[in-house]
Amino acid sequence: MKTAIIVIFLIVSVILAIMIMMQEGKGGGFITSNGAQSDSYWGKNKGKTKEGILRKITVVFGIAYMMLALFLSSKFI
Image 1: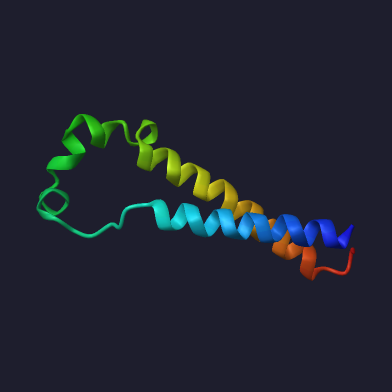
Image 2 (image 1 turned 45 degrees about the vertical axis):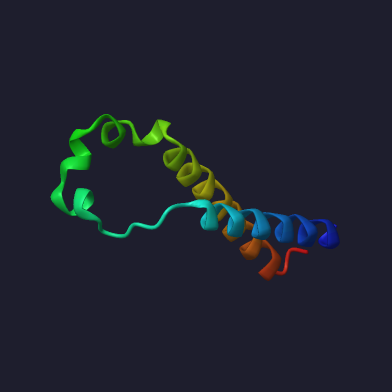
């Protein structure tokens, strides 16, 4: 049982690292510092863009990573 959870933990870790590396940086360019991006179509629909979807998947895998890490560090297994 413990071996299976450790394998799942490692898979989640690798996927989380890949998801983080696929995201673009939040570097401040002229458009972001100007505030004009929030008025555009892509600024209003961030949840439906590639970046929005990657961010949601990253949050899900981050939560799974933390839950598995807490479970593995506990004395239940």
